[in-house]
Structures are given as C-alpha cells and as structure tokens.
Length: 204
Image 1: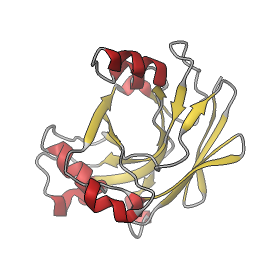
Image 2: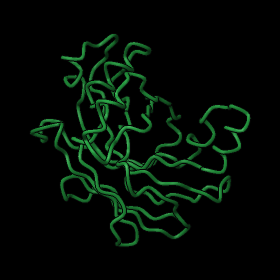
Image 3: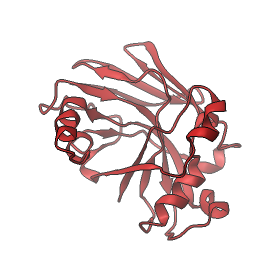
C-alpha cells in the first residue's frame, strides 16, 4: 500500500484557482507504517514538540492504473474517508535548512490517522463534499471539495504518470486553506464527512 499526499491544494477564494493552477502539483509519500486505523489513539511522537494537524479527505484506489486519462480517473476511486496529515514542523524546518526532503517530518509512526471508508457510490458529487475537524469539541477546520485547486481526478491522473496506482493505495488530497495548527498531548480529534463522525481519537 502506498500513502500519497498533496500539498497546498485548497483556496479560500475560488477566484484564485485559475492563477494558482500551473499543473505543478506538490506530491509527497508516506510509509504505510505511518497509518493508524480503527480510531486507535495516537501516541504523541517523541521526535517533535511542534506537531501540526491538517484534516484531509482520503481517497482509496480500487483498481490498478498507469497513465490514467483525466476523464477516467474518478473511476479508479473505490472509497473515500477522512484523515489527519501530521507534520513535525520542527523536524521539517531542520530538514529544509539543508534542502532536505519531507520524509522524516511526515513519515513518522502515527503521522497518518485515517477513518473507516465509505463507498464512492455514496457521494453524489465529488466536487461538493463537506468535511470538518473538531479538537476538544471546538471547530477548527471546515472544507468543501469545490475549493480544491486540483480535484481528485487531476491528482490521480497526475500521480499515475509517475507511478502505477494499485488497489488499496490511499491519497491524502489536501487540507482546507484555514484552520490548521498545532496539537498538544491529550487533544481529542474528531473529523466528519457530511456531518457523519468517522475519525475519533486522542493523542496520548
């Protein structure tokens, strides 16, 4: 299973999209050992004091594809869930000083908690999916896929030009442009899609 992420993929104002959309998608990967499932609590990583959360919709690939045409790309999605793309900000800053990769800052154990998945057939319009994140009961992030710079199909088609996508691969598709921040040990995170609570865990 591959875990793929896209960076900087949401806007506040949809009018900004045409100017930003250059085709240069920011793609990174995470190891499967970063994934946490079944709403298990996540151990606050000892490697960081600046643990940044980003809530994101996560699409699961249902069939093998390479060089996928844009018009066909959504047919490769089998399920959709919600997850947290964690970044150790202090580790990332140290890596950037030496022009290093993001791998250690985003690939540590527990860096990718994901919910259970819902069949893609349950979503009438992939360009109009609402999702949100609450921390300790307070609303922190609210997103809708209509504010994506690159939609699901564009991400899948782009990634597949570089690597074969296989059943079970998951793609974190970007976080809303506002509300990301830092977590502390003991925080309780709850993420929903269309008002349905799917991800529910604590940092311990």
